[in-house]
Length: 198
Image (cartoon, rainbow, N blue to C red; front, side):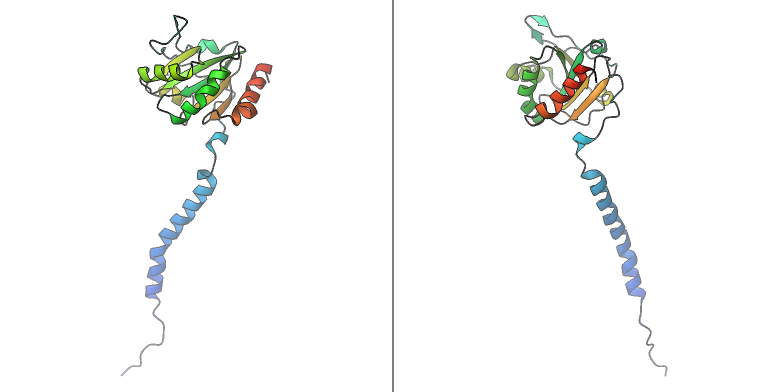
């Protein structure tokens, strides 16, 4: 009769470790991605388009939109040459766009600038009602019905605001809404830089 073995059985412990390894690896990778990417403020992500010409994508006008009886034109990329432009990508269904609209309407009174709107994937009636409700700061409104132009502008999501310098080059991008907190401390500072030509 043989004596029972005194060597501990390590097989169950090893198989538990092998089963837990993928979970541990996944948790570790998720933590790395969260702290390196997920915790990043998208408004601080620099645009790859800074320093490059504004996209040369013409956009049709928002039908039925007029100012003093004259139709407001769509976006012709040639309008960016020679003027400092603030380009705002917006939609009537975008909640933060409603919050920033009165600030843009006020900014539209600055005669040193041209304010350009890109209406993103919106119904024309809703877009016109939106501008009727808050006032229209835009001298130009291009309709981006399928979202293709916004991809060319590198838009993450509406609203976004760009500053295009006199040479037709994008000099600044703001991801997210214009707010009472950032309009004077960020946006107007960047507009003044563009107006000064720096």
